[in-house]
Amino acid sequence: MIENREVLAAKKFKCSTKERALFEAGIKMGTIYHQFVGVPLDQDSVDALEDAIEKGVLVQPYVESVDVRIDRSIFGPKGDEYSYHSLSGEMLDVALVIKIDNVRVKAEMRYDPVLKYPLMYVSELEELS
Image 1 (cartoon, rainbow, N blue to C red):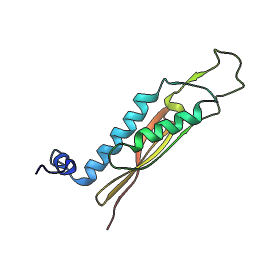
Image 2 (image 1 turned 135 degrees about the vertical axis):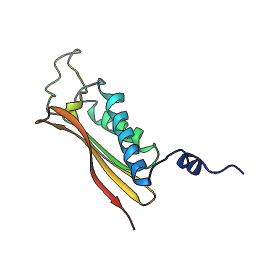
Image 3 (image 1 turned 30 degrees about the vertical axis):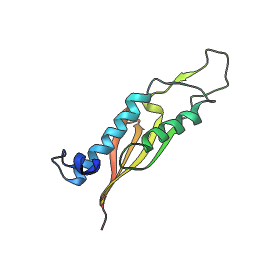
Image 4 (image 1 turned 180 degrees about the horizontal axis):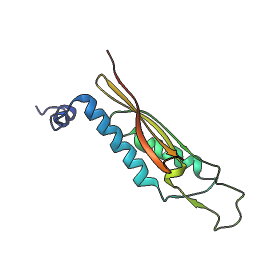
């Protein structure tokens, strides 16, 4: 009988569970940023885009939770057919939690005005008993 996929995958990682959880968090954040930046949106589609990003991330391995918020301050009244925006890194506010075995990682993506950069970082790292 073939081993289950998790056991087979775990054998590929030459690192600790903690390091693997951090790696998984980084992969998810990079996916969100590079897959969705540039997507056209307006005030009528922003809720659906947040929901689509969350649902897409939640199906990936080890994701315990994800919360995506898009800054709506750029939206004004819809003027005409050409009145839309493209999602940028500055608009993304993301928090996700990865859990592998006894390790839980919370990673966040937030625009940092001092750095002038949409920073992705680890905000919590815990080993559960």
